[in-house]
Amino acid sequence: MRFLFITLLVLGLIPVKAQVVLNLERCREMALEYSQQLAIARQQEQKAVWTKKEYRANYYPKLSITGIYFYNQKKQKYSLDGGYLPTYVPGENQKLEPNLVVGPDGKPIFGPDGKPVFKEYAFLPDIPISLSMRGVYMAGVQLQQPLFLGGKIRAAHQAAKAGEILAKENVRLNRSQVLVELEQAYWQCIRVRELVLVARKYKEVVGELVKNLEDAQQTGMTSLNNVLKAQVKFNEAVLQLQKAQHGQELSRMNLCRLVGLDLETRIELTDSLSSTLSPQIWALPDHLEQRPDYNMLEKEIEMKQKEIRIARSGFLPQVGVSVGYGFSGGLELNGDGADDHSFNALASVQIPVFNWGEGRNKVRSAKVDEEISRLNKEKMGELMRLEIAGNRFKLKDAQTRIQLTRTALVQAEENLKITTNQYEVGMENLTNLLEAQAQWQQAWSDWVEAKTQLKLSETEYLQSIGLLEGKNEYEYK
Image (cartoon, rainbow, N blue to C red; front, side):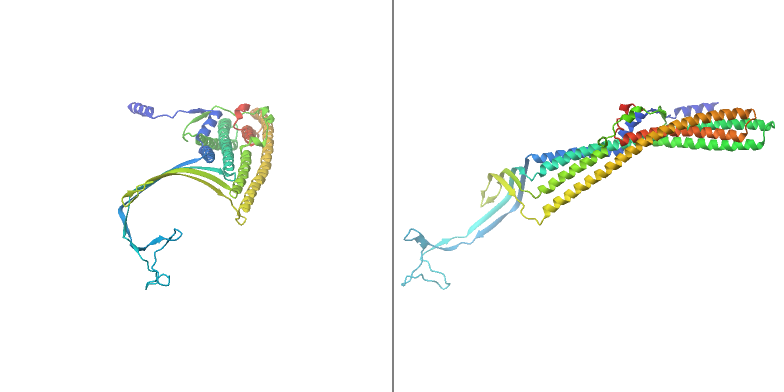
């Protein structure tokens, strides 16, 4: 008694993880919040926003401040050699003329070195120079404004705008992909849950038959062979139930993975498979412009067009201006400072003249890239139209399958009822009864598969026309 009490006490202390109740809408929200794939797309969108702002800044002047400081402890000392310098005197026209010694013939006299001899010389002593750079500084402020860059700034900004829209469409595309994967996993959970019910019910029916046959065999009312036939079917039913339960666990874990829950979390799904489809779905528009991937192709072409303009702008005249104000000081020459400040202005014009066809070929290359993008858009557009048509037919086939499997299930139930009644009165053999039970179980499984396929086909069709994210607006539940 004491052992039982301690055991119950210990079990009571073990935390029990509560079951999480979910529906499709809540799972969609959780998957969109948790998806790492979508998080990457959102970061790419944010990057595109900053890139657009980066290119927009090129319209405005750029202000910069520069500063340089230099310190050299050692003073630089030099000396300019002096010597005797020739002298000059005013001439007849008041111009300075060399003060030369003239001979009797009126011509200048030259010394042994071949140089003319002057009457007088001026003595220049050696000049010492001391240069100090202990704390030299330069500072300035500069304002630069491009006036014309061949349209490069405008084209780059427009390309960045198109890139931002492309990134937004990429987020939409990733959201739809996340939702498709989520809904497939969600309806797979519902599917295997119902298949478990089918397998369990089939096991109960066959198990009851085995029990009745065993009782009858003990009283000699049936043969052992009949008991063995039923037991074989019962073993198959047990295996089918086990497989269905394992599939249920795997589908539950997969759904938990997509919505960000621990894989061991116990969940309860409140939705069930429906056999009907809203007729409003056939009235939905199916324009390609609703698809994010199609819009991404259009924006890619637009960006290629801007790249043509950017390539052309590199070989057009470039005009810019700048103004600045600078300060300098700290340099001393023979003890005297040389501090200074000044204003400066600059205008620049660059005109490409000849580049061996580089510009023309660069523009041609950009035009080829644009044409490739345009052809790719046409190709993908045709494939998208085929995808829409295929998914529409697939959805209609799923509706037809619903009707056929429902009829087959009703017929199988009726056949099982008749066969069971006839077997009980001895008008039907065991083999036919077992076959009727198997047909009933298969018809029920087909009915579940048909309802699941209807949901999946609906999801795929809505994705192909670009309206999956707004599914709730059309009340598809």
